[in-house]
Length: 265
Length: 90
Ligand SMILES: Nc1ncnc2c1ncn2[C@@H]1O[C@H](COP(=O)(O)OP(=O)(O)O)[C@@H](O)[C@H]1O
Ligand SMILES: [Mg+2]
Image (cartoon, rainbow over all chains, first blue to last red; front, side, top):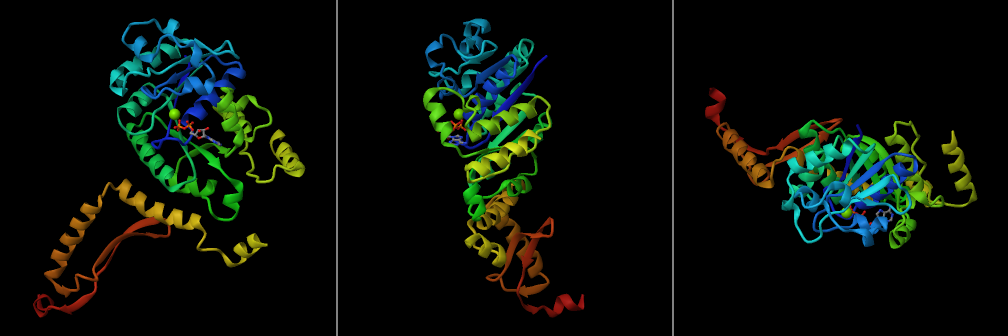
């Protein structure tokens, strides 16, 4: 029996889809059987971030409505044969699916996969309720900005009220240079305010944009700092104890050397 | 150099401090789910009760959340114009 993990945030554009794609590819690379569900019905995106947009035949709503079999709707990844995507419907809206239906679907998928990752839409309405319905664990993505932290706090409140998920925090798009001059909240500030356990910190990284352009998750790029952060989160999701990566604004030789030594240990 | 300065003198105007302070206040409202309207009602109710005992300056009357060490507190600042003789004799 696998584990279902929802990636959510409240606010849009903070990195849920990016995180889902990277953790999915990373977990698959580590040998797990992984399924990604794009629960952002009407705003399908995970397919393009994964570079799988040309292979879609059926979608989540087709499966839930019994129009297509799950195994026919799942798209196999081009890089890993143990990685699959269930795309969102693009021409329907969130009300096409209910939380009960999602719970059934995710439950069914957990029997076949080690990890089922669910990419949640923004908001706290039905789309969010659908996305969290079948999840065992929730990852809350937030950027170090007032509006994102506020929305994350709201989501954490909703998740904790359900008493089903213990939410974990992923801080995304942090910039060491801005933190250093006091113009961006740092990791400790965010943990203090949100009062949940930290799972990982992903730096702002141009490689994310480049990798999204290509449909190749950055986690597979050994040069990318964000990719490295995602690789660490993947290991933590598998139960390993990995120290948090040091925030650095200089990617020079010494910076890289220190970083390498920091984490090999 | 600038960093050293900032460390030594402590930059209170650093924008992250502003962000944290604003978040702190906004989250108390969010978490207690007290809307600005509810705060206004609370204030008016307090005003009504306290006015039975003393004459207070309702212009200067302020109710707000504030942090004391690690706990949040509801702090009211109530300027008194005069204390009513009646309430004292009771
Ligand atoms: N760590 C990062 N560094 C740079 N850009 C990022 C990072 N994380 C996300 N982005 C960019 O931010 C945008 C929104 O990300 P996305 O994952 O689509 O957010 P969401 O799914 O929460 O709406 C995308 O253009 C993405 O490339
Ligand atoms: Mg998204």
